[in-house]
Image 1: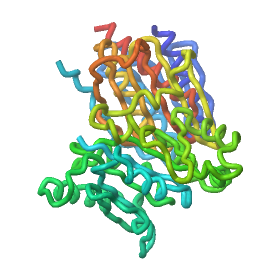
Image 2: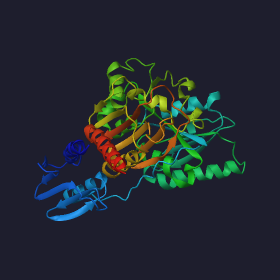
Image 3: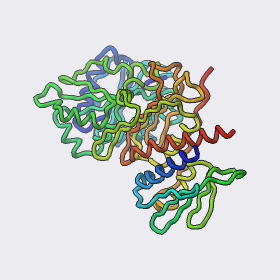
Image 4: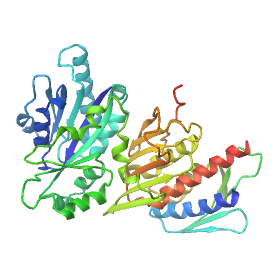
Length: 100
Length: 336
């Protein structure tokens, strides 16, 4: 599961750069990390250590931040790379329980 | 719930002619019509004659620009007058947009505006396409492409004229919106029964699942793509159920990162936590209708099928996003 998630995340990040009209390079590292290089920005995404309330640690130009899900990872990366992007406060209501 | 049918289409494509014909049909009795005309002096409403139990309201200005105020105010006022028995007790609303209007904000309003969303349900979008000049209009006017891409049903007008409904135009429409059935209008007339499942059945069904899944219901279990210029229809099909949280995160990410690039999304989803009842999702750009549960699966096909009409969004990104979120959510759930 871990390797599968890493592989698909790596491809997702590469496609995300395309979707955002950005040119860059996404690479799967030998450890658990994925790195993104875009212009002068260097980003490292890796699983958070156990015990933290985050699933991912995102390091952008040396500064580390936690991310609770891939949604947050994408938001942090785009904020760092795409000057025309403004993080949205859009939230979708969870699917309600089906009526009995 | 009162169904609202939106009739859109480029200038001169035959919207008013179609509307005039429909209002004369028994199936469209008890209809309130909202006609939007662009310009100081409207004319279209003069060309439409409503029967005794139907009536016409007129708005001016560009509906898509003033939609939050004008359309909502018009519908709210109609509902108040209906409640006070000041107008015939209409059972559906037909909104004819101006030919230059972007339908997306109108659909967003019908889906999400709190003042009307509880009483009005978007019943469908009908787009008229000029059978003779439609191809050149699609080449020239991006808004006409968007009108076609957002449709639940296409009506090809002027089909009685020589050279109309040529195969290249039909192919173009199929490429732009494979899920929308095409009806043919002859001398401005189209069988009103083709709209069954749109305005006529709006109260019975939250969305017309059968029609918009046509393009996604093939035997292929992967991704289909149609494209014209920058617009694509992507149907993502999943054999395995999707966890509810993954679906929520997927919709949230689409809304956040695609913005206007996500023209429309419709889906029927097999939720892992409730596999016997499908969830229906429906959104226009960044506005999503609250997910709804159907009482049962409409057929033996229990695969999740999500149709996205997008502009400049890589189809692979959409597929990967859903897969990645589902894997992430599953791995978190498995650890607990």
